[in-house]
Length: 111
Length: 113
Image 1 (cartoon, rainbow over the protein chains, first blue to last red):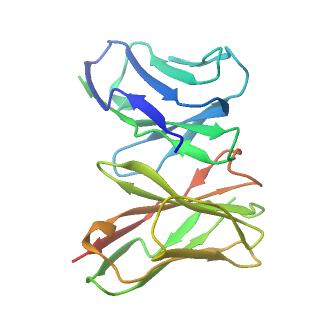
Image 2 (image 1 turned 90 degrees about the horizontal axis):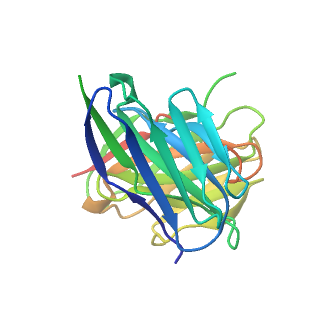
């Protein structure tokens, strides 16, 4: 079945370092959403990308959607301890209409 | 506007029992999706309901079932519980479709002993 692979699974960084998580789909996506889940919390929507090659920024976070609409990335510049959590991508299949979540990348930030 | 409400928050059951979880979506949201979250497997899609009809289903055994009521509230049932069913069960509501933004509830933590 269709899969959305997300790497890395875990990332430990020193505060101030950059961080990137990558999402890859086996098939073309209609859109991709990103969510953040703080420890002990529930996923919270961050952003949605729809267009091929789209780039969106939210302060220190930069989101990209690949030209082929099969991959996406989230880059955090100069991480802070408040960035700690698990980041999930979720791709909407153009074929099935299902929203498929990646396994998530758990970010730890050392102060 | 109230968020997505899931009850109960915590549940302890024994193998073989059954359990029913409840989800009240955000007012005006008609789509409700259920997910199972475990440490090793991430967020696994269970099913999506819209206007009382199951619109999409994930790859879970028939022991997992759900329904949606006319007020968009949804319930999920798991029968003949197994140890491996221990997980955080998350409900998410959206306006009309899973392509819309998913608003998650706090989840129900189920422990099967």
